[in-house]
Image 1 (spheres, rainbow, N blue to C red):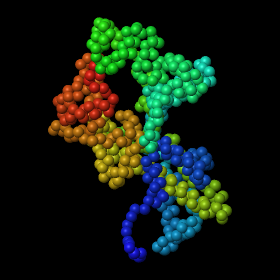
Image 2: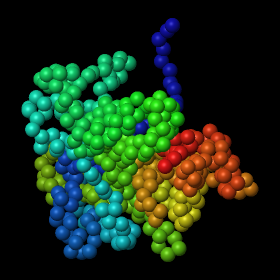
Image 3: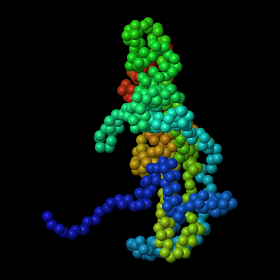
Image 4: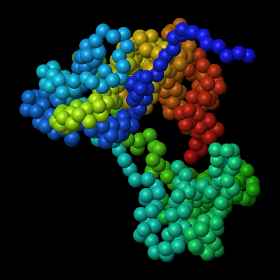
Length: 503
């Protein structure tokens, strides 16, 4: 071993702060981007939007143009001015960069051409009411009933603990949780919740039962059996129906009615009639209140695909996103102070990097969407069944970007199309072989399976193997039975034995 000096020449990619910021902004969703812009507006005094700099907005409205934005062209001019001030030196140190004549830069901005007032020119965009929906959650609905109840303060604390332990389906989940270190906390009981709230543990079951009778009936139950039993008792069901729920829930799930009839020593016809009534009960109390229901998620599209004549045109959605400018009046005042010149110079550079990164993000999303529209034109024209197989590499090679960039662009970005609202990742599908035809996208196969099951005889549902044969005969799709089962589970469709309806 020895200590020595040596020279080494190598190339490596340096992640500059500007590049890191551009990559981070590219993968943000629309709401996250809005939050990021607000944070930058709070921390950078030279940044302004319409609310901060209303003078620019009034001038733009009077002239029929939108306020000036620091575009790539102006930023390039800025870079040329920086290089001119640094002379012909091979290396520009940080001191020379900070000595840019920002006053001259701000004066020249008024002579530069502003951006056009509109990008796409489409006025008939879908209203925001079609994309934004929000309904009350189950916990909020139950908490409102708690406020209207005559519970004591300690009983209300117990009820709040119960509401805080409800899962997405409306059941009371008292199981322990697994921590990061692998340890699992012990399960708790309603008696322990009552003790924590200052309630007599013997009163806990009675309080919980009162909560289970709130709307929707069966919420706050500890399992499915308790949920169905509470509903049956409240609705005045017969003893036979309550006993079936209490003792033969597993046979109900398997449609094994003969076993129920043998064990309870009743005719099979009475079991059929009882099961008809039990099937009217709600097995998921939070069905109409779930925050994760796809129909209730508030989604605002990032881009629109609008058909203009015979072609599809992509335009971005700039509603709700602040347009950033340079706050000229404040910057000129601060530049009069020699001590603040260096600070303002740094803030101006940060503002320009942010504006450039946001503009580059917008252009990249539009460019990728245009490529998707070009490759999936039949989908936009005719529907999901004409979706073609496509992977990230196909788009990456067309637009000249890396696959990781395409992945960032398409994550949590949504597009409004004539066929509906979709995430950009929706259009990337693996291929399924077809006989004597081009391959078909896996998403189209899922829709074909869904359509076959919807049209089947409910009294004699199709097995997975029967679906395989129908796909091969009618659509020329070659697919394995296990693949049908996988796609069926992804669509949330039960097996044939559980889809059978006797009544």
